[in-house]
Length: 139
Image 1 (cartoon, rainbow, N blue to C red):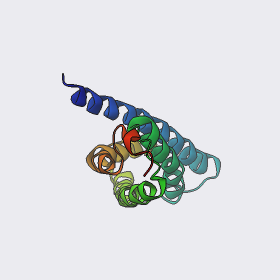
Image 2 (cartoon, helix red, strand yellow; image 1 turned 120 degrees about the vertical axis):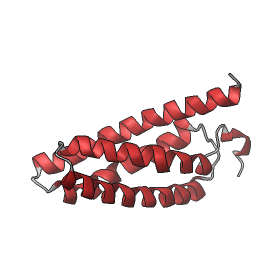
Image 3 (spheres, one colour; image 1 turned 180 degrees about the horizontal axis):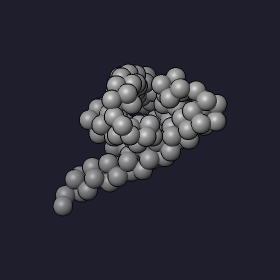
Image 4 (cartoon, rainbow, N blue to C red; image 1 turned 90 degrees about the vertical axis):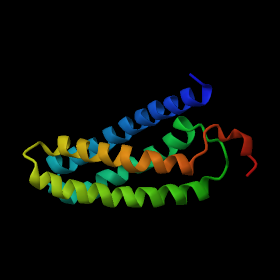
């Protein structure tokens, strides 16, 4: 297997690990707000999604993609653009799915996030972050 192909698989696996951590944070906040504070899952959803956002950005930039460029501001803006799209997609999917599917809300959340992550976020993040971006540290 060529090194670039292995790196791509490695990036997907690392990004998935970051995603798992961010999802854990999201679930913890969602469960705390729904079960602990008695908020409706649809009202708690934006707060929970926001909590996982910072984990996604730093984890994907530094850990998954290994992008060491100092273009934090530009990348954060591009990442937030992707995340704004993903945020809307997650909210819309969850809103429809939690009402339509006879499943626990956390399982519905996991299904929705998986669809948005693999179908939207990961492909677009690969354009935001450069794998092994250490070559352009001075940028």
